[in-house]
Each structure stands twice: as structure tokens, then as C-alpha cells.
Amino acid sequence: MARNVEKDALSGVETTGHEWDGLKELNNPLPKWWLWVFYVCIAWSLVYYVLYPSWPLGTTYTKGILGWSMRQEIADSVAAAKKSQEKYLTAIAAKSVDEVQKDKDLLAFAMAGGRSVFNENCAACHGAGGQGAKGFPSLADDVWLWGGTTADIYKTIKNGIRADDPDTRGTVGVGMTAFGKDGILNRDQIDQVAEYVLSLTKRDTDKAKAEKGKTVFEENCVACHGDQGQGSVAAGIDVGAPPLNTAAWMFGGDKATIVETVTNGRAGVMPTWAKRLDDTTIKQLAVYVHNLGGGK
Image 1 (cartoon, rainbow, N blue to C red):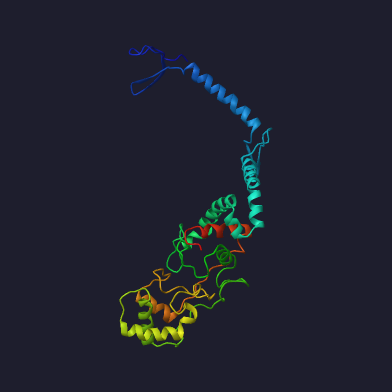
Image 2: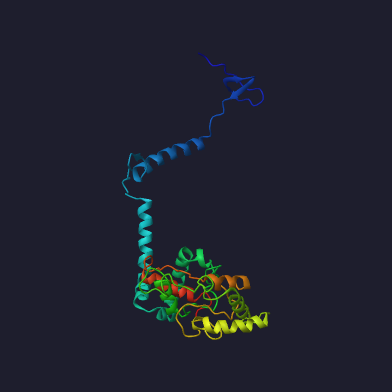
């Protein structure tokens, strides 16, 4: 059947014979260069199907005669990266954390590795910059409950605090005594010792109550917090008691919070990371934490 072909009066191009609502379709063929690019793409796709993985086959796929795969390329890249790190990791494994700290090259490597491990495992509690949060100590100041040397930090990370580890710091399930809850101090005595603790940081207090609170403090608190409230580390006692004469407060330093703490006690727990991280990784993490700003 012959097509109703005619030339469009406006453009001078032949029509295809198709018409819709008075609109006629022009017969404009594709440019030659476009057609050749299209044919080349088809040819290239056929070559690609032969050379590279392409067609799915149920649970597998065509491998291609070159045997290339993205999975293998990534695996090779990871293996190459581990190979380049091997000399540093071997050296860190053979040295103490103090020795790593003193070696310029190992320190730079440990800081990079430690930062990655910290962000993945520690930042959720201690903050991205180690600034801490309520109930979680800051790692960027100079107040350390269990010591701030690189070796101290290494031990704390490795064995945890009141954790399920035979060498953990502190005693599992045993924290600060709940002086009110256990009936050791009455409400007035707790109020008085709270006033005295406030006075240790030079804040305005009820002087009469603070004076009585000093006696309560000496009889009940000095053994852990030191005679000046300087904390167990400064007092040479390894019990993890925080200093009370600074502005650094893990749970809050207002009177109401101090009363709550004395009444109910505190028993913070940090997990042992030896069950999750290898020793070389823990060393890198300890070096990084030490260099956050408050390490001794």
C-alpha cells in the first residue's frame, strides 16, 4: 500500500505519511555520525560481553576471558594496603606504648590508626573529640581517674573498668559507696558534706554546714578522694576516685547532683577491649587518646 508522502510546505522535508489531528510527521533521518556512533557502541558491547563479567546465570555469571572482577580488585587493593602497613604494625607489636610514643614514624602511624579505631568504637560515649559526656569522662583534659600516662591508658583500654576481665581496674560491681541508700550517713550529714565538697572549688557555701561537712568528709571520703579532695590518682590510691577540687565533673557539680551521688553512689563500667581489638590496635588507640590533649 503506497504511503501518502508529500513535502511539508514550511520545511520542504518529506512527510512519513503519518498524521494526527492535522499534525504531519516529517521524515528527518538520523545524522550519519550518530548512526556510526550507535553501531560502534553495539560492536563494543559485544566485545565487552566477551572480555568482562556481564551476563547473570542463576547463581553465577559469565566470567569473561580476561577473568577480571571488581571484588578481586578490591581484595588486591586491601592486601596491598596491609602489606604497606606491615612493617609499622610489626614494630608497634614489638614495642611498648611508651616506645611507640617516642618514635616519630610509629607515632604518626599510631595516631592515624588510633583515630580511626576511636571514631568507630569510643566516640559514641566519649565524644568525637574525646570531650566526654554526662557519665563518661573527658579524655581531652588533665583529669584521669586511673592515670593518664600512655601505659595507664593502655591498661584501662585493654582490661576495662569493673569489667569482665581478670585484670580489670577496680572491682566488678563495686563502685562508690551509696552512703545514703546504705544508711551510713543521714540526710543532714549528706547535705553538710555536699556543702564541703562545693567549698573545695571555692564556691559560695553555707560555711557552718561546710565546716561540719569537713568532719564527715574526713571520716568517710578521704580514703578514696584524698585529704584535699585531689582524687585517688593524685593521692597515690588506685581506686578510680575523681578529684573533687576541680571544675571537671563527670555527672555534674551542682549541689543537687552531689547530694544524689553521695546518697546513691556511682559505679561506672568500661568494657574490656582486649576481647574485641588486638594488642597492636589497642596500643595505637592508647597513643591516640594520650595525645588528645590531657595525657600525662
